[in-house]
Image (cartoon, rainbow, N blue to C red):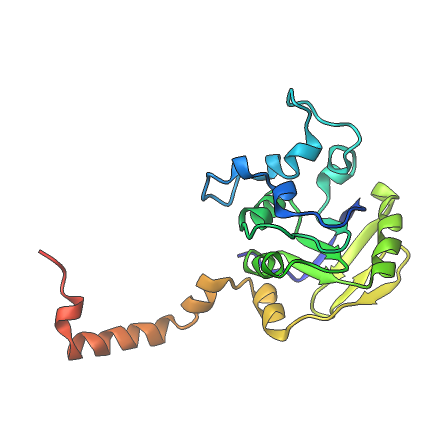
Length: 206
């Protein structure tokens, strides 16, 4: 997993509440178990017409938001079914941070496991950031994970809370597998010890 330290880039404003996981990545795209390739179908029903052409009004179809790395949205982001494909699609598109007043719990947890930083800020602050994001290319936002603050285009700093363990994992690019591999030496020692105590458990079949 790619470490998350400081991110500076374009923020796309989506002034909607209750954006659920089926809106983020519709069910017909859940057949794959690959984490790549889902970005083109992110917000599919909002981005495309029935003939596959882009809907002009949708924010991610407009410049400069096609290249957004931060998404600013309304309350209860990521509600609905617990599909891990939702953060996969966001990440594959290029979104590495989502800012909202609140998140659905399972989506919130899945973000951390996939290298996306979900930031909770008060609703009034989020509304203000959305308005500033409307400036487009002239609105660069910085997310400083180490110091836990969002710096908006006017230089105002907005502090956010974060669980220390999750912060550590993001800063160091550690997903569940990465955390396990940190114990590789101890795991190997245990297996060697167990192989001596119960060799039949480790004997290869045939």
